[in-house]
Length: 495
View 1 (tube, rainbow, N blue to C red):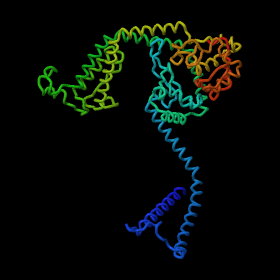
View 2: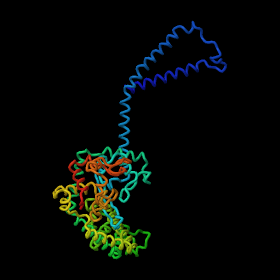
View 3: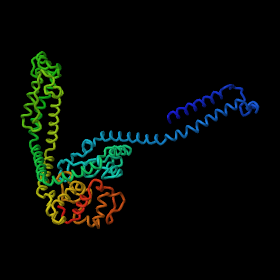
View 4: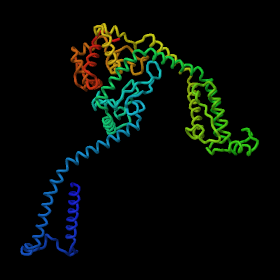
């Protein structure tokens, strides 16, 4: 209805303008006297049917405006609301494009449900898999401005880089707002957020029993790295030999080269060997046969990354493996070999430094196994804080490990081998030596803070000034779990 009103009003306006222009041009001549300098029609000439027609048209136009403007107004609310929805939809879509462009899922997982990011631990130099948090429930922990702060400035000492211009990142403010809109659109229900928090707690409790094995696995990987460096020069020679053989097969000589240097007596022999392609897959029969032999030899060379390199090519079948065309597969295998050659070349060129760093990393991991900062004496925690109730102590430690340790225990997100003592502090302050009892005089004060989180510039506890770093857990943790973790943190023994 409102659209029709707009169209009619536009047509009337155009018609009236055309009438005025035509009337102004009618009878105009170079010798015409200006209207304000000539006599106009007399009253008798004006006060006739012509005046009645003009007044009638004016009444009709007035009536039209009197009706159309209220009608237009009645539809204005719906139009404005539809514009808001449209703008929101566009912002969400553009935000999804930014998330895809900057590959947020490479760390936070597909669907931003949480994942891992490759990171080099600053203390040991060991490459670790950093646990990146989920983002599709982040608004249950932070408000919009706080999420924008983390996006803008990143998180120092972690794989999270700065994305906003203010933090020297690539996104302007409008793009950040669109990412925030997209994140808002994918938030899970509160029920799912609570269930996810519970799964983190359960996983943290299970991790207490497997921590030793996890650290031992980290040590084994570091020892493998040292073995890789020890054999780098010998393996480089082996990989280079097999890679060059594969290159010659896939890039055979042509008429412009000296055929004798490539083992051919004449051009006809070369054509018979490298131009016959029975299955017409772009890979000559002889090339398929030789490449099969070369890949098998490389696989049997003892170089671990080549353990599954071999492929049997059939000159009569353009798709020997049923996965992809033979030529594409051959080039892919050659690409793998070249990549290993580059990796080994870098290792050989920097062998002394890399070996020294790897040895230091191994020493760090072995010290972690000796110190066992990642272990908890749950009976001691139960006796000191929970009246001997091990079940409550275990749940309390699980809540802390699952939801608090990533900020309050240095190295926790990198795995147990890199974790320092519980409550040692990291992005958040240290929690040992009774600090929670000093900061919060009562458990109720502490519970309010843990439930709501910190707000920038807003005081909390005893002389605390919020920075917005501390998330709120009141929407994802039960009253029981909040009470347990508060009791645990206000107790005398944390591990």
